[in-house]
Length: 320
Image (cartoon, rainbow, N blue to C red; front, side):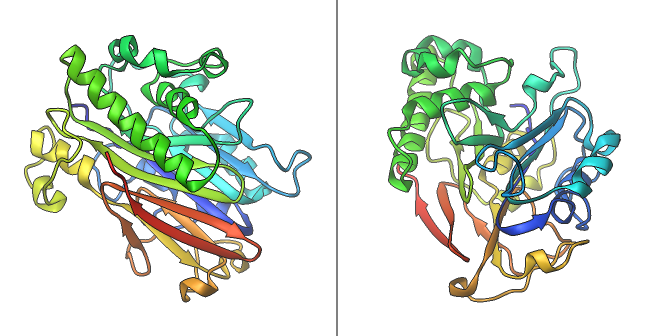
């Protein structure tokens, strides 16, 4: 399996400068592209972000920026990001294999955003043999989303599939669609004899909400792979155990308040969940220490929603 190391970050809360999320923290999203805490490789295959703000002319639509180059080489980042603030953000840096088969283009950079839906998606994941799996999965995809597909990535196809399975916008609807997507993928792999390790760590975001997903399949297409991801990682890059550790590793969540009061660097005031006004869901903690960050374990889904001045969190097990 290709050891996919993309990085994802999502934020909801009061309007806050984007540079406090994407540029200035010690382990900011852009710094993760150059020097990720958990992996040895650079992230050179592109990056992007979606941001919603009441100060934009279309506050209900995301400001979408994507470039097929390393984030730390993008001169525009230092010019655009300090001028923006937002109440909802979804950012991503893309890692891909270093070979000629990888297509570097705007269309292949996350996040993905389509017409006729408020949901925007980015992921740290991998769906092996996805172009072959389409034989079984296309029947579940709606034309209104398929006709908007422009790129050549597994993530965009998963976006089409997940949108097609959504029957509503409630948390229950989203969880049901995610569970059905995983079951359909597992069955398609079995029917076509293409079982393989599959990593699906997603952030699904509309304004004021984050749905964080941590799920996948084992080496033989099983929906319930197990193991201690820390011990598995000790086997080293390139091994089956190391690849499995990347599927089983957690995502990170933090709730707090007064984030927006520090305009130059990452700063959260820890508080009880009842007092939280903002939340972040990410592939890695934004600081070198992980104090205050909780884990979203493999097989779980988290729903974060801003209601008035408060953010609420619900974590559930996925039944796949």
